[in-house]
Amino acid sequence: MGFTRAELEAVRGRSVPDLLGDDVRLLFVGINPGLWTAAAQAHFAKRGNRFYPAMYLAGLSQRQIDASEGMTPEDANDLRDRGVGISNLVNKATARADELTTPELEEGAAQLGAKVGLLRPRVIVMLGLTAYRAAFARPRATMGWQSGGLAGADLLLAGNPSGLNAHQSTTSLAAAFGVAADRAGISRLRTPESASRDQQTASD
Image (tube, rainbow, N blue to C red; front, side, top):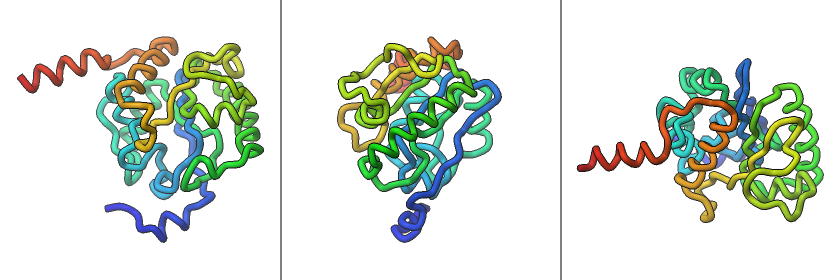
């Protein structure tokens, strides 16, 4: 199963609904939906994206989610119940994030600030260094916790989980996600270290 090139091209510019529950404590923010994500109407849906494997490894989901053809209600409710939310800086589907203009990113930053002010999460994880720098006019920002946070929430700048990003791995993302979850007060089902031990035990 999957989407044809024509089906993917047809969803350019389409939005994807935020995944939000009643008590969002940890909010993940992607740059913008890719075409596969827009077609599936599920965040980080393209096969090869490291987001959900990292979420599972960090203990933030009951199982490794496959959103490539849409997220199941059970998986969505699992994240909501655990206080995890997912949004985008710019809710407009493109084939590549670098197709977004600086004004679009800046407008997205303003809208995100307003959204965070309403949701009041404890922690935000922004997934994309270059987009963050442009959107928030912080050209020297580096990975890690950002001084001042955003609208009352602590903000952790992490790498883009796209499979095309050679600077990140599932393990490095899981480590960042775990640190953010701990600060947000979300109990984890496992840690990357315990998951690695379990995998090693299973292979012995």
